[in-house]
Amino acid sequence: MGLSLSTRTQPAPITDGGKDIDTDILVTEILLEDIQAFNNTHNKNSRRGPESYVGSQVNTLRNALQQLKDQRSEAGRSRRRKNSQVTVDIQALLKRLTVLAQGELDDHLAALALSRGRPLPAQTEAQKGLADVPDKCVPSS
View 1: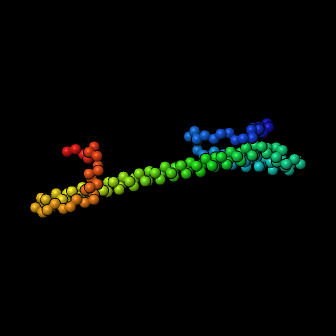
View 2 (view 1 turned 90 degrees about the horizontal axis):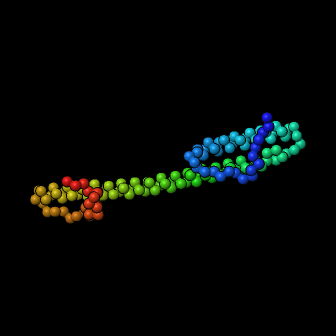
View 3 (view 1 turned 180 degrees about the vertical axis):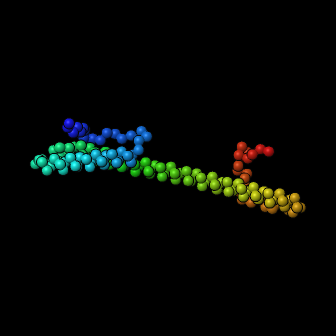
């Protein structure tokens, strides 16, 4: 049984397709190690260099390996950008909720002051922020 390797000189296009890039990288690295072992075995028995046996396949696998590693790096950068945006969105939401909670507390304190016959305190920044809340966000009574 002989060793059958493709003679393609360019790596096949790599698509996400739900594959695990780390697994693809590992398989490619193992193939490169196997080819190196094959070359080492045949170099002891022949005067021909490793390029004469599977040199183009080694280059194809190395290119594919680099493409996989680049794809993994890009996926990591994309994930970090997405996570960064989610963090910004969460921070904006928490800031808004903080203003709403403070505005609610300030309204409650103003109502207590009025119920005790005291003058109405000046409107706070948080209370002014409540004026920007759309009616559909405020629960109806």
